[in-house]
Amino acid sequence: MSKSELIEHLISNNQNFSSEFSGQGVAGVAAKKLLILTCMDSRVIPHEIFGLELGDVKVVRNAGGQLNPEVENDIVLASHLLNCHTIIIMPHTKCAMASMPLADVQKNLANLTSKDFSNFTPRMIEDADSKLRADVESLQNNTLIRDGVNVLGAIYDVDTGLVNWIS
Image 1 (cartoon, rainbow, N blue to C red):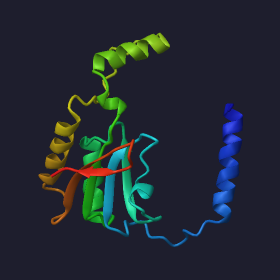
Image 2: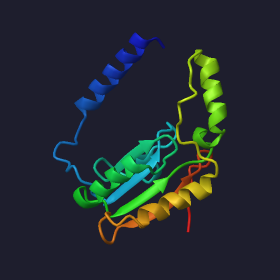
Image 3: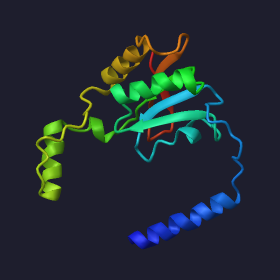
Image 4: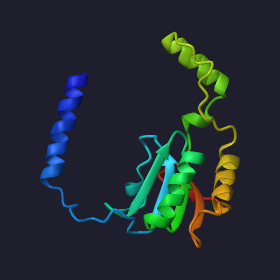
């Protein structure tokens, strides 16, 4: 599909969506009092995974579904201003961010593009389980989070569709 065909496809689908849109008046807070931090991977669709509707949940995405200072600030805001009383950090299986060391990513990108990626330092994940547990613990210990907020960790399995909760 060419770029122009893709844009036309998106425009057409958006017009269809808009013609049936019924989300007027949905509040800008999370109706289910839920926020999910997850990966930007296209296989992870939180609304479908949990059977949620428009307005039910706030979703924050990044490479690997990882907690970082910017995301942590967003979550602090959401806990106070957007009705988010439960936070789920949910990376997934077969994540590219956990598939190779940083040096390999830099080398692969340089080979693909002939550009210098030596100073490019995305947050790679060495041990997905340990990273998730550390992220959950970090958020649980953040004193700026609204009192009483529940922080949970889970891993979405892209092969089965199941969510495996960590204890």
